[in-house]
Image (cartoon, rainbow, N blue to C red; front, side):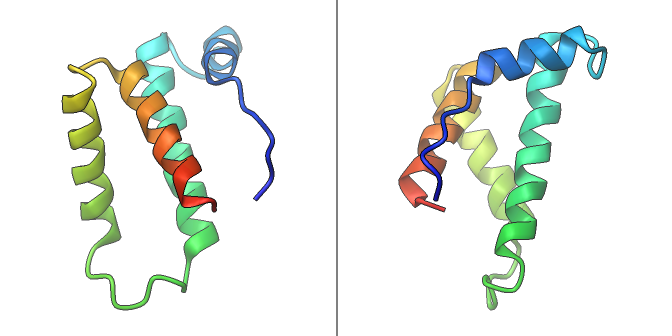
Length: 88
């Protein structure tokens, strides 16, 4: 895995500035979905026997949102921290 750092706040701001999303909240959700789609592509075929990856992702996101007190930006940061631990 690359040790490349991503400035999440800058990516969110850039997406809103370019008009891809109407506000920060929408950008956070949209970018998080893009990240999940990317992960699915990277992991495709390597998760045989897992009944429902989508369900697991939804549950994980709900748990992170709850842990972050409903703050989607904080939940996204927690999500990224969890990804770092996986060393994908």
